[in-house]
Length: 155
Image (cartoon, rainbow, N blue to C red):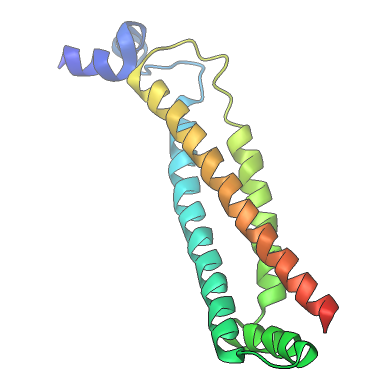
């Protein structure tokens, strides 16, 4: 049991856990761990929404075919909006939520935590992965917003 505790919290954390009841006293590690779990599920949800929007665009492109450029662009925008109702609003909402999430990820400050405990190392790696995934989703959202605006400008 001691080995498991030392593996998870390190020696210092284990001793703090025994004497103080908290392996990381005066440290927000456990709050950060809860926040990371919430952010992971939120990011998965937004990733799915972006995939739905991308598939709506692909369906619209497949349906439109080729023809007059003006008619094709206008038809593509209309089909994309029909395939995903409220498209412009949803894109703006996703962009806002992803920006907010990125700020929360940046708010997980681990520089002051001087611990080699597994929980802290896991938190560091999860933070890095969340940041990478958030940036990827933000790039996809920006690309979709740009495509939507370009198509609107052409019609």
